[in-house]
Image (cartoon, rainbow, N blue to C red; front, top):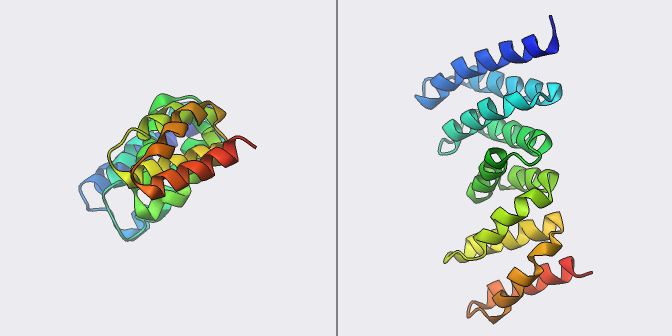
Length: 176
């Protein structure tokens, strides 16, 4: 059996399991199996696995407990390593920066993606929510996005002193 056929078989099974996750009927064993399937797809590295992995991550984004954390971790790792400049993969990773139990995995995935994630993170700097701005600043610093410097400087004038302070630290990191 060729790698492509193996990838297709894993994707087919992952799609079946995703439906159970989506409707809440998946048990812990199923959730662990899904995390293993995503881990296998990451190891095989075929880009056609990105969309099915994104679909599973979307299904679990607002679910908690059980084995959901492992699915998030493996899915974000896979997107970070395999996503490259895929806009859907980058968008999914960015959306997980706001999910408390997935933030660390999302940060690692953003670092793996690197500069292609910058434009999405720069867009987050315009948010009215300070926690979104702080998250974007941290992620921009983590990936070393020098292109963001001109977008960060205006945050030094923010009324929110924490945003100004985080902007200063991010600028120091980027301008070294």
